[in-house]
Image (cartoon, rainbow, N blue to C red; front, side):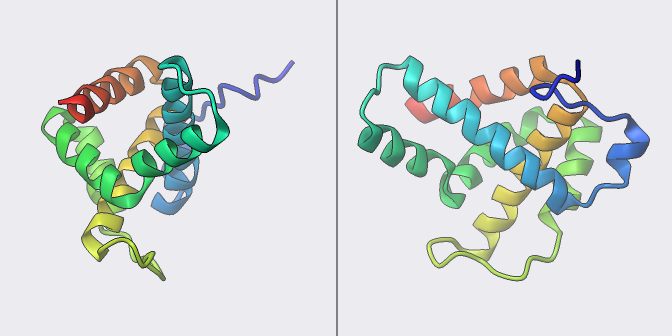
Length: 136
């Protein structure tokens, strides 16, 4: 049976994807991590879960998260991040600056890239650093 929870692709397949395609996957991965983390922390009402999730996944929060993990990225991860950060987007949400949105897109692309490579331990390591920085 196909594993629909753990999609993986080889380097050649991933190399054919645009940064926005990686960000599309990474957006989901990052939000799933955030939602799961909030539920495990004891938030139970839909209203609390939604408002806390939105606070943590919006572009400004992802910009801060990206700044936190940037010094920890290896050369390959930095390359993925940089490529995605420099991608032309056709619109920026009103609540975000162009820079915040670029970094948020890059963070999502990095998480998408790591996910599609099957590097779940690395995802957990980086997300743990982000969570620890948010509580400081």
